[in-house]
Image 1 (cartoon, helix red, strand yellow):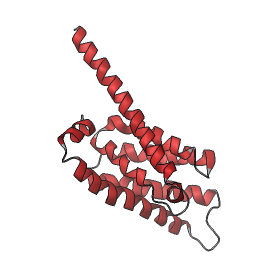
Image 2: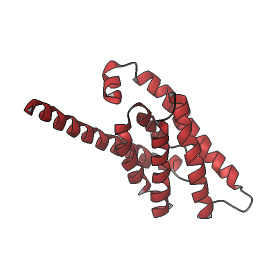
Image 3: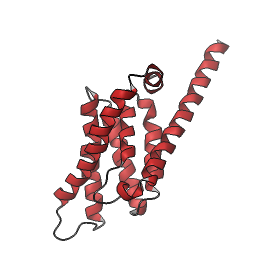
Image 4: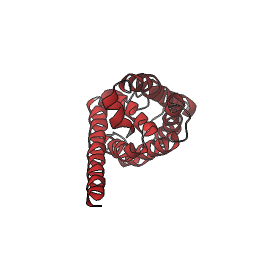
Length: 170
C-alpha cells in the first residue's frame, strides 16, 4: 500500500518536472527566435512541440504555460498572452480527437490561423491593402511549416528511440 502511494507521488513529481522542462524549452525557443516568432508572418519552431499533446495529454499544461511565457515577450502584449495562449490550448485539446499525427498537426494550423489572424486584425496590424484572409493564411502557413512539416518529421524520428518514446508516451 505504501509502495503504491510512493510510486504515485514519484510519478506525479516526474510529470510536473517534465512539464516545467517542456514549458521552458517552448518559451526559450520562441523568445530566442523572436524575429520569426511574432508578427503577421511567423514560423514558431517551438510549435512543433505541440504534437506532444497528441501522444500524451499530460503534456498539455507544460505546452500551454510555455506558450504563455513566450507571449510575455510578444510585441502585442497582454492581448497575445490571452489570445495566443487560448489558441494553443484549444489546439492541444482538439488534437486528442485526431486519428493520426498529421491530422492532429492541422488543429494548430487552423486554430492559430483564425485566432491570431483575428487578433492581428483587431490590433490593426494589417494594412488597408491587406486582407484578413491573407493574414490568416500567412499565420496558418507558418504553423503548417513548423507543426505539420517539421513537427511530424521530428516526431517520426524521435519515436524510433525507445527511451524517448517511453518519456513521450507514458
